[in-house]
Image (tube, rainbow, N blue to C red; front, side, top):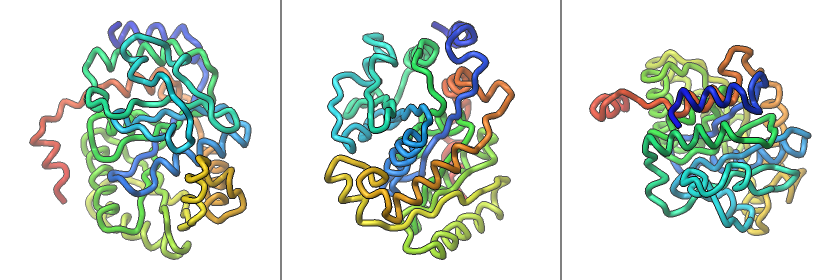
Length: 297
């Protein structure tokens, strides 16, 4: 199925005429707590009554199912290989959250072919499960697929922590998305901060460099405090919003989930899931040399 045919099918399908909020959570580097943010916000939104699907888009090193202790028999690899549908591969998490698990340890999933990109179109076009929100938890780094998921979403959450490499890598990610693909708005989550003041100072570090070099608008949407209960919850194969609901980080995640629910869904075509998938499969025409150049400050 080519891209045009896939979009025609989606125009007649379950999502036609109905907006789905699409939020991509990314961070530029590993270790910033991106998956924790994705999972906690997704579960909090589900508990608040939203129909949420969480797509584990770390296509080569999946971890969402591991974090929850969920046994997965089939994953996105089996969807793209045509063995099953997206609905069939979904597993249910807390509060009715729908999780699409990715594969782990398969290099082919980190570098999808054009045919497999078409498989993504087919998977979403045939999705029957009704959802209000799609949250995409990307891999670390600035691979083609990370960029594709980020530029296709309505809202891009960039998770940063107070480490020089985190700020540098977040900036590099936003620079490529801005200069190569025209993405101009980013929502920032300051994660694992010691105080609200530290979170605001971290945000100021980031805006200082983006204001100088990029044409982007940044919004600080959450400061998530350092909280040892996150680790304790994971040991119990739970997330902090369920295991320790009154802890500081849990309260921050639940507040972010409430805030995210108010972000508007555009009324133009990009507000529909089919156009998220259309944007997802567009390939960059920039060469390797241009990509490397875009990382230089």
